[in-house]
Image 1 (spheres, rainbow, N blue to C red):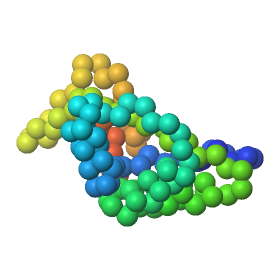
Image 2 (cartoon, rainbow, N blue to C red):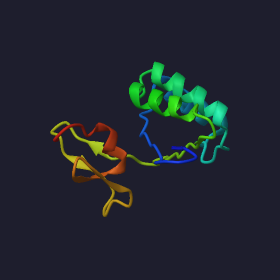
Image 3 (cartoon, one colour):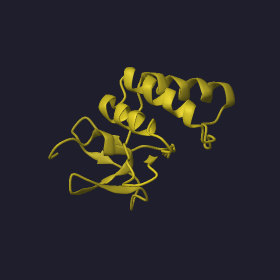
Length: 124
């Protein structure tokens, strides 16, 4: 999220790229848990946005957020969500998710489990 001194906040839902997925895997192997809290650090997050964009994340969304954060007095904040058990999609396309999904969101006008929101595109 970029919070400019005057005007509208800008958000981008950033898909994890190869670098970010690798980081989480290595972190888990070393500490036997996932990083649940990361301190806010705008410089570090800008670097993460750039590297994530270049390694398969949401290229245009990451770069827009990065460039908007470089404006004078703009504040950049990372809002992270970690899903402990994502939904499964079976071979026949059936979605198996938590009963009464606690993390549902609206995507393209439909209510979908948050753990599948990145996979929903267009009018699916």
